[in-house]
Image (cartoon, rainbow, N blue to C red; front, side, top):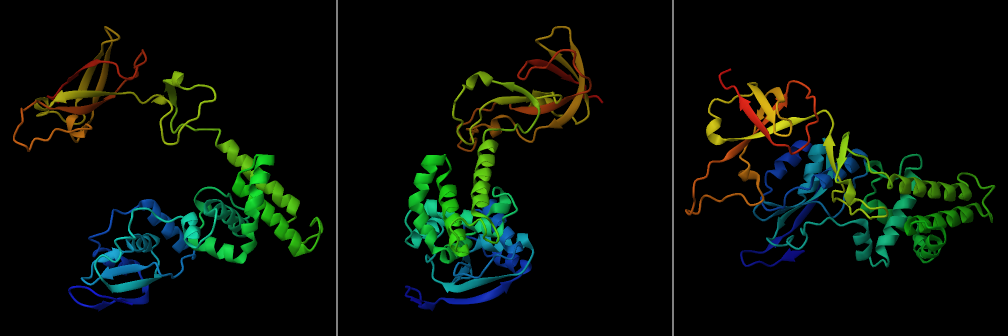
Length: 363
């Protein structure tokens, strides 16, 4: 393969090399043009390497004519994280701009790979193939979570071993409509039952050695039921009191990644006092503090300075002030100071209450 350039004609060179973690770290030093790393992608690659499932493909590591890394930063970072040597295809002398169309910021999933191969209904087919692979290789483990990750190469290989899976797409809709199963689970279960029956050459498969098709169908339905059950329960990360629960309505659909309610954590109250920057000259962590709460006249609490903020409140606002344009009026800034309580209050400290805080800076 040759590329004609205005500077000179260069021939792309490729060679399969064993990349050690130290070598990968050294190669990453030449990474000056790639986008920021995706830690999730790196972890996925590293787990596949540790499991011994990483194979050599045309997708490797590439350097341009100036020795700059133009492709493969996630694979190199995964070698460092896995801490084991891995074989990768290394391309050198790659003309500038060759990989610009590849690095779009979105990793190809199994459905994308099958679509590129010309498969129809690639999303449904990829999910069915994944179920078949898990049944063959992870029969005794949970089919959700990190342990159930299946690589794109494993999807392609499994489809090559089970080409008749494509025929089960047509019946997946019918089974899903009749039973309420997810289409991919219905299609994969239909194929596996048929495949097992044909392999045993029995009408029902009841005397077939190995997995009974009825047991297989029951297991798929059980896994589906467990998954549906898990999705009906949302666990809070901490214990506390729910606020704004009136926003929830019976039957309401909750969008993913959007907050549904607010939680005020039990037993971990603190005071955030916003002092002027001119008050910080003698303030230190550990100094005693006295707190008065506006909501409870006459109540005084003892505490101490737990931490002093690393930045002013305006610095972390959505639109921080830009003071380098020359048109600026000096405003005294306020710095958040966290006050830890040394005693348990007799009355509940509701989040957001106003307080008066006095700190003894002489100590």
